[in-house]
Length: 170
Image (tube, rainbow, N blue to C red; front, side, top):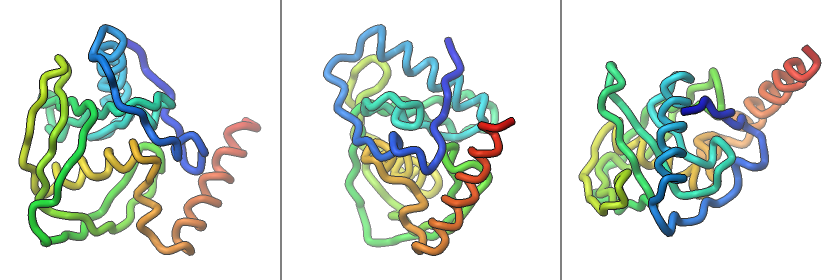
């Protein structure tokens, strides 16, 4: 297992659209293991392969306190099951230290492959539904800051750019 580098906004590689996984093989399972290790270390509750500069449709999620409920989503997609939308605070490992209110569907049906390449469906509500939508957005090259006003998004961008410049000179 390996800790991987998480790309940070406004890195243009975060805008790359991920390609579908054609075969769940040893390379993909190693990627999944490395993604879990990276996410738990960060610490976070979800990580998309795009965030580590691997542009394949792979997501890992674990909402549990004890890090013992890992979920793997390969080639995930979802349908919105009702019109109810909910606002919640979102953060992102690629937009560190920033949390903003985002509105998303509250009830979805996920379709994906598990770590063994087996298809499954799952109805999700609440935080899990939000997390799934957030991570699938990453696979599409979209970030939660894209739901914010241009002013807020640009403010976050300039603060993170300044932070990255300071780190590069340190």
